Structure formats: C-alpha cells, structure tokens
View 1 (cartoon, helix red, strand yellow):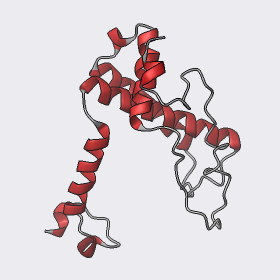
View 2: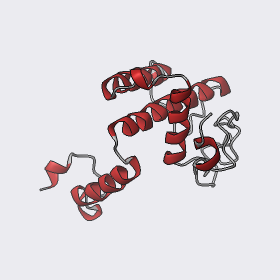
View 3: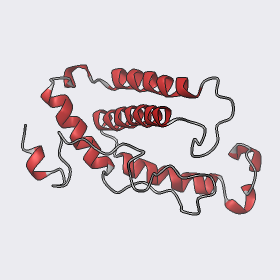
View 4: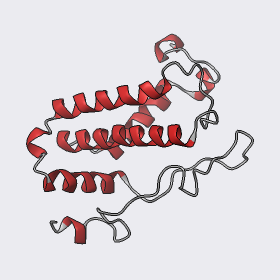
Amino acid sequence: MSDINNSSIPKQIKLDATFPSVLENEHNTNASNNDVHEFKFSNELSLETIRQIQQEFCKERNWDQYHSPRNILLALVGEVGELSEIFQWKGEVKEGLPDFSKKEKDHVGQEMSDVLIYLIRMADRCKIDLSTAVTDKIKQNKLKYPADKVFGKSEKYTEYD
C-alpha cells in the first residue's frame, strides 16, 4: 500500500478493517418510533477519509483507468436503482424502517453505502470539494426557501415569489 495509509488517513481507520454495520453502531440501535433519542451519524469517517480510502482501494486495483466521471455516474445510478428495489412494492415506509427485518435494514445500509461511495468517488474524479458544495447548496436553499414563507409547505421555490 502507498503512504496514504500512514500519513493521510486517521490512525483509527484501517483500510483493511471491517467497519461496524449500520445496526451495530451505538447511534443506530433498533430504536422504535417512540424512542426519545435523536438519531445521529457516528463520527467514524469524514467525506475526506472516505475519499482517501476509496482512492487507495481503486489505485491498488488499477481501476482509475475505468473511473471517468461518466462511468462513475452510471455506476451511481445503478446503485440508486438497487436501493430503490428494496423499497419497491413496500407501500409507504415508516421512518426508522420498523417493519424491515435486520437483513433488509442491512441491505439498505449496504446499498446506501454504495451510493455514497460512488458519489464521493465522482466528486473526487470531477475535483469537486463535496463538503464545500454541500455547504454552498444549503446556503442557497435557505435563500430559496425562507422559513417564514415556506413553513409547512412543499411547493417549489418559484411558487413563493
């Protein structure tokens, strides 16, 4: 492995480590809808750490040659389709997925992970700082959708002018 393992990635993250599953994470226990605890992501990985891990993973396999922005986008769309299949024909799904089995929730977590990994990989290959882009987009959305005008409404921002 290259020196990215030793210098850039936080010491607690090992590229060959098995990360805890979504359901094993202390913040993501099988909480019921009556749970008073607020859901939070763990702080195990940053977008940058995921980018570095995926970059190293692809480099070790000589896959950069295949990872044009277009190819990554098509793979991303495919993964979104796989995530959609899990929800297909389920009807309305409740927050927290209380009617899903552990196996189904694990599957959702795996497919969401694939989507996130490809999204971060695409941002890397396009040289887009995703954290900055998200921050900028949230600022734009606050201007487009001022809380005092849109509270409790779902129309597009053009309907509020």
